[in-house]
Length: 597
Image 1 (cartoon, rainbow, N blue to C red):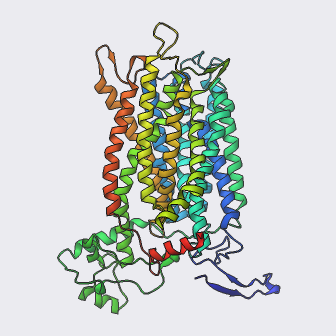
Image 2: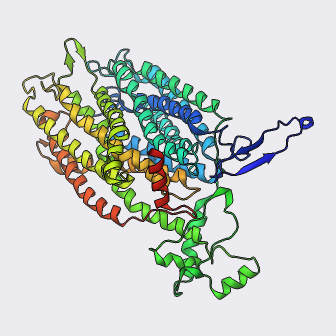
Image 3: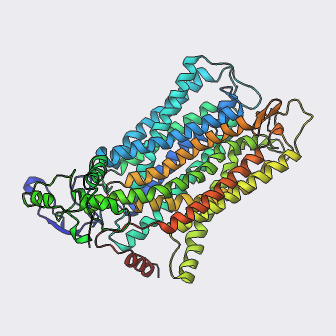
């Protein structure tokens, strides 16, 4: 229920009479620290501003990331395997920084301030990368295209380049999980229509992310492939700067949530309190402690759930605890609240699901590395025009846009009508894994055909094939479809299934799975090359792909993802959804269905 508040304004003191107005029910506040008025803050007014900000920031990020593997090979002089590994490590670091951003946001700075600070770092990183490329890396002039390789670089020049791209990683990584959650904050879960808008926001957020990268993967990618790297990097810096300005423009209309402090002590108190009572038997829920006072910073109380019963000991009231409670001297390291215990249970239930998403991110990582390398070894010409290999990811973006539209306007209503309920986030994520397997099988089959059409008698055709690069379209489209069914519900799932005060952490889990996926991808490439390289045999992913077996690597990923799918299905059946006090899941589903009708 929305809260009503009445503020008496005194004209002498310079205040304006606002009268009776309905506030949000989720504890959100406005830029002045007052309860957020539903009609004057948030909703799609600020939601659209955040979507545009996300699109521009993504354009800037992919202006660097989408062609980084080619920059490392053509400008920095690295071979394919080394460049693919470095891109995977860099991308992994980007999303690893999301944990830092989420921690600072939930604990101290709040989501708005965290987004603003890390966007400033992002802009600084892009400017320094542009300067580094222009001043020292692109020598001789015009190098960096497919024809003219750049010269060697000093250790100082190399160090400044890596400092720049890792500042980009820090800025984008710290910003990403918070902007998604901050956008979701603009919609009140206590209002049925706003709750549905919040679910829709995640789809449009991911669509904005992909549309933002479309410009990078086409226009910027074309100029960078021609060796005009500095132009591409400056365009990225300008886009990031505009995104930051637009973000700051919405300051007065945003809805905010106060940070609730460092969550680590709250989690630690549960484990310590449970350990102290390890011999205690908990007879029933009635003996568990819950603070009757209002939760701090608008945090909702959580209902007790079965499972992880050992942790219930932390909330069990012993005779000693009862004496302290009577004196209002509760020791949190000896007695936790039910909500505290349920927060820990919630995290423990999420972790196995999160681990299963890492393998999908390994598949996703190939699009920015080996897909590009594979495309670079195919026929890229249409008459006199050469298609930049990285621009093929445009088909992934088109796939995302198409399948988001199909899902929201056709598949989801059809399933709701036939099954009387919508697909859950966990079900959609399972479909995403199936589509990821299909994408890897498609990529493997394309590589087998590419090898059949390999140009073996051309000394200047390093890794080339007469097979058209457009044969890659199915693997990109299938990857885009899998993203719609994996990353969009993953954002929804981790945001909805994390306790209040840890929402940014929920989005960071999604980003961190991408991070670890890139690290695992890098590790797999290293292991495969170590095992498959023997004597004169160059391994599966050599510099000249015509001498390797990239198809076997793709089929290996398909097999590993299949195993991951089997484990995921079992864990999804085991998972128990979070439940807040006064918030019945079945009622919400019924209410959502009625609003849809």
